[in-house]
Image 1 (cartoon, rainbow, N blue to C red):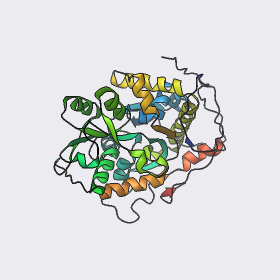
Image 2 (tube, helix red, strand yellow):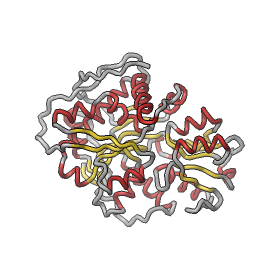
Image 3 (cartoon, rainbow, N blue to C red):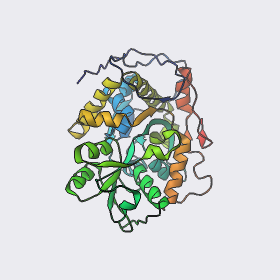
Image 4 (spheres, rainbow, N blue to C red):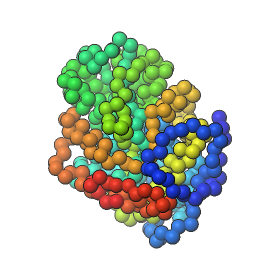
Length: 366
């Protein structure tokens, strides 16, 4: 495994597009370094608590940790960082409601649920992180959607992004389900690692899962892809991971939030230029947080299904919210998502780099 340099030798440079595709490179470029800013001084916090998953879909967060980018941007302000690992989004939202985290890498549906359940007072989506990387993988012999009838299909957590995607998909296909695990298809919200074990034992028939778990079931347990979620979206792009901030923290400490976004932006730019070292960085962090790392085959397959971007793809978040309504997991009044985005700090970071500004799609400030 390659060594990942912790030194920083970088100033943000302009890019022509916000969505950065993944392309292999051999030699790593220098890791980013905070550059002098002419932006006005903003209030900073003594501590920031960041939530994330140990998934390839959270690669920008993992790379930023491995390269110490959060520390490089926040330490000069005197801000300490505390990291909290989560398995799925709804638990992270509950942690934010309880005041346990300030900023989180999380999927769109928990973001929507956290926003709407508090009448917009809990959080704002402040940036993007990842697009793509979710599949419905099943055991051999399940060859069509009709074959799902009578089967047990896992998702990471009730109300999570993949859980909503599965329920909406099944409803559109005319297959029933209920919260008790009944109906035509029994949906079983299950921790991802447990899903792999259950699938190997034959206790579940598949799962609508994020990477790397979809790839692990395929490569380690003989599953096959029935539905690649990207095929259900225009241009194959859909938000898998965005970044949220507590509205209270965002209002009180915008300088700290901006520094976190600088670290995230730098991580995404570094990933785009350093694919092989970036995979190594993600592997090191996954091993740190879970005790084991992915096989080369699993991370390679996973990586090919993802794009890393600071664009939060707001139209796809809105569609994910509509899917939650379709699945019976959310009641959404007209205009309920207005204000969910606050992209002003991310756009200030991009402006400094002379990069294209993001749009909130009419759902907030930009």
